[in-house]
Length: 455
Image (tube, rainbow, N blue to C red):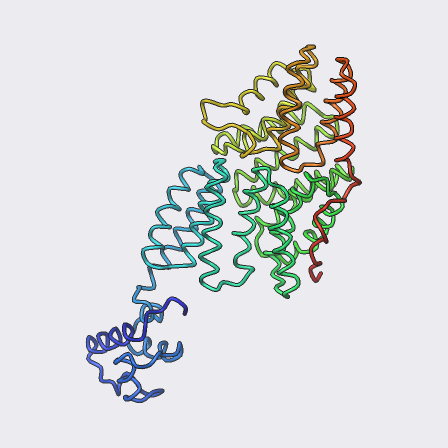
């Protein structure tokens, strides 16, 4: 036990408990140890082994943990129960309310020196911060959780949730390459080190699919999805399997396999309903709306996206609400409801009521998508100056994020606009920029793909 007290403190505790119970050193020692050993232990001159402390704890009628640390065993059990309750509150209720619970639990864990429980509370606070859209705070919480686990010599699989949380916070902020670096380097370390924990590997492979897709690395995303599907039967966490199905749907859509993507999302949604995880269920409605939009069924797409937006708004999941609003606006525009679409986009780019807005540091990719769509809407009304302004803003956001998958299309839109307004040289520059980003599917400058897990 790494957090046990020093030998002198334990010795005094054993002596006090023995005296309270009216036992002699001989009675405490029998039958496995000698009175001399107990005398040496009580004097603090020997560091007792776990086996010796368990024997003594049994003779004294106390828990091993209480004898080794001075903390009653029920404290850590009670704390773990309340951590589970906070996790359930995050899954089914309000992220801000869950954050209050985790904050109180963190203070309690720190006060008692419970390292594992402190890390769990920090992880919970990180997840709450992501839902609320406070990505800097989320990153700080995940980094602290990782540090606590590292100091406790926790194995790498136990640190994976914190590493994955850090990667997600960077990804949502538009830092795609760094997110991929974190996920790939951790996968390599697990696979090359023989640490083949199915839950840890599945968490990482499912997590890296989104950044791969946004960077245009479709082949690598498909490979990650293949590994995730193969690992799923070995995983012990149904919520993790559900998240995997949601991520895999993106690669299936990119390959034109819409029916299979819809089936994968249906599996995920059913698991989330059983687990009562509201935010993830909302994300399934979101993805199914995207599937319907890809198929051209815009009425169904609008229904699914409105349902997702309502659920996320009720959860006060500000970042995710803003992101799904952008995709809803795209569907509304395609259905001829451009005024409503434009109003929604302006709201998510600068929302004074919620104090939250998409931008370079929070939801950069969806901020770029919002500016792109506002540019298209402006072009429809022949407001070329406003359209150009939005396209340029979108281009800046995508270049900063390294989202090669969307840059080429945006450069085409900007080039066409410049050409129609007579600025041929500027249009050619825009087209050349787009060609520079239009790489073959799956090619990136990321370096070698992560090592393959044993499947």
